[in-house]
Image (tube, rainbow, N blue to C red; front, top):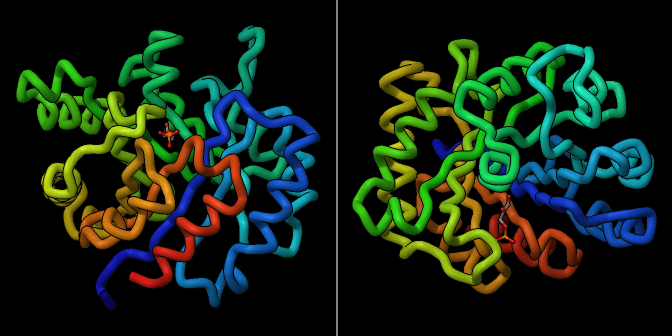
Length: 255
Ligand SMILES: O=C(CO)COP(=O)(O)O
């Protein structure tokens, strides 16, 4: 336990959330334990870019951090509709999700794009949460680890370090489906990723936080956090409800 990495419970609100949901965010902020230094875990909600500024004001004084869900790889310029890492940092975000499978699928983002976004995040002092994960077909074909290896190698820049980068393993087929890999499969993938990070980053590779994401709920969080190579979760649907998100946080504390 003592040598375990400090857990991070991160919520991804995706394209959900307007001013009407700020009271729900406040309930999460009020329910997250302790102060940043006394809490046994870090908690984060990644809200839509339009809500970051108001979210920061809503959670002020609580240990809950606020992040964005994507950033452009460029510092600024002619990219209509995009948001830069500098804009997220300016709004008060401390983290940003990059390479989520929904962006890889909906916007054709490649590993090179994800690496650029990660670098852009780092340049602004943001922690990048880099998402990787296989499709159902890739898992059925026995390719899951190869796919994740390629994504990790291609998306993580040389400057990635435990202090500026978190890796989230999110099997595409587990997202929003209620399906999850077996505990043994999650453990095998996380152990495998840890090994790859050690090979590439040396001793620092042991300290990157490795999150699991995909249908994490209060009912399964305890057993998932029981896996020693799982350092927290990236939670979608259940992060929209304060009761569910806080119940997931409570299971981390109990592990
Ligand atoms: O995509 C996810 C988090 O980024 C997971 O979403 P769900 O928890 O809704 O499956």
